[in-house]
Image (cartoon, rainbow, N blue to C red):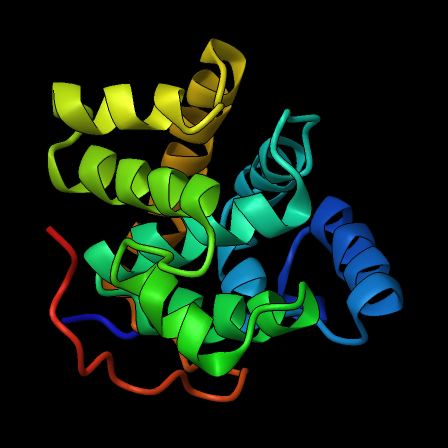
Length: 183
């Protein structure tokens, strides 16, 4: 198998260099996954536009989806990144592990969201009716549903890029999940 390098600023297009500079200002560094997108002239900008688009989900809710999806897709990079981001959004270690397992015993509404994100990902969009009904009964809307599905797609793209390229994780590595996935 061919190995993928994480391109440096000098190895990417001028347009991607500008994005690297902006990421460095905003985040303090260019995450390896984002740099890997820059192997393409357009993928990094397209991905960031999609990932940063307006949504009905709050930042903390987005992390619920990101963690559940990344666990199903077994993406070490995204699990590590979103564990760090989840902590920045107020989740503790136990809550993050629960979210990765597709549940949230600490919050009924987030539990319905985590279960939905996991179910959509596992079933490739063929969502179980009872999971969907539970989502709506927990107070989520049709707008939230569509935004959740879009976020599942967003995160799956990153999961697949990392799982295919095997680029190094540049966040503290997330611990293994030692609990069974929720049913």
